[in-house]
Length: 369
Image: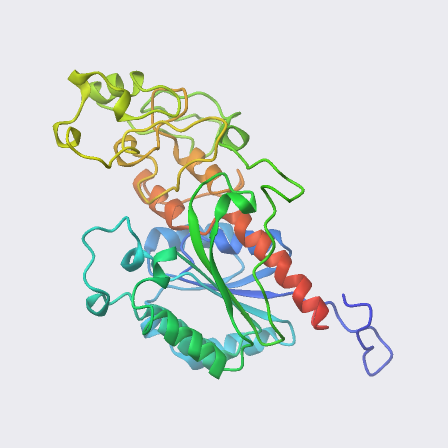
């Protein structure tokens, strides 16, 4: 509570205010869990993936969940839910599907032909109507490069300013600089109705209190050993995909931190012989470095540097979740493939926690927390 806040009209202290989180494009709830860990209250989620819905409800049973395409959401109904939370500050989190903007998507249509591109502007529609105190957006850095002088990003920024938000701040940041064991870069945006809100200072790396980056070992080094195709009965979602006999030979020929370039000729893929890329495909992680960025296929050995550093298998569902900084008690619904998709699409939990604490300080300075 702000020590300078006014008393109630009867001499009683004003109640403590808690930030209420509305998570649009919520997926399984990575951002929500991070904001919750920062002391915020998750009251709303929206997504139209059935397994993600079940995961979200499983972990946030008291929150209202809407299973709809955001384009079908009535803005007045959301405004009604927001009004119920006042006078608490309200945060809108919007992490629209990133596939139209990511380098990983080599088959995407042109931006003006992809129906997912305007989703950020649908989020803006709800912001304008509901006037949340804080807006947070996370996406891939490529969102800044697709249509840089038109929709969706520039239109979204203009719309925020027109709706009363002080100059929104945004940048592409390296996740490892916020204590997340991945070298992935993400686009972050923050906007406030209560003054300029910069992105939080980095927490890890040179010139911080944590000069060393978080590593794969830090986050999965103590999990029980598994063979390919096995499930650990004691550790939630610690299950590894099967490998073919040929891929078992390949991963056994791969040193820690190595990849397909380390294989003997008889194990090489013909399609990679003259290719300059694909160095991460069929790769193993390094114990004492951050992982490469996790994708929706993060438990598949053949789809990236997702091989365990020393065990002859791809990382498990639980290991993928740990590398996205989900706590052990966070549970997922659906098949292993669906869980991996949810995990790969999620905002890393720790990132949202850092953002949440930063937002709390900003609101406290504004006398709202």
